[in-house]
Image (cartoon, rainbow, N blue to C red; front, top):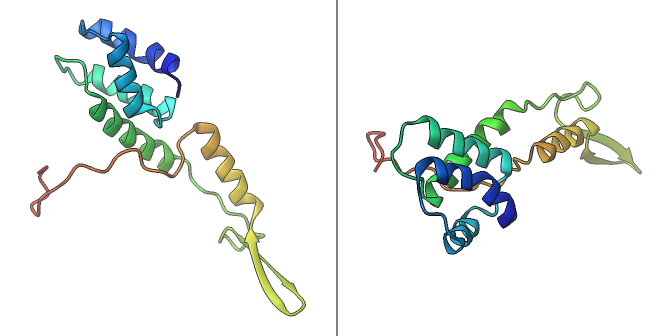
Length: 137
């Protein structure tokens, strides 16, 4: 994401929270959020505005909320295997008596959907630490 894209998303939020969002602050937020896909950032901003908070969210908060949104969007994309690959995502071919495997076309179509949505497999932030009781640490 570029600084201009980040500004387009966060300046209206900063105005709504009456927060200072000067160029140095924008660059600092950009360094933390540049790997975040825009759909996930939009979801994080919606969460910040919807939960009744009083202050402009920090960049790490937005990154963690974007990761929650990315995981939700990613899990909503269901992989639909085909019968040709026996629903494994792999095609098997025997060449000179050796069985070889390659990714099936159904897997490639699923990956194209993931790329189009912009919510790849790489995590954006680590999950919140929990103690042994399940409460946030």
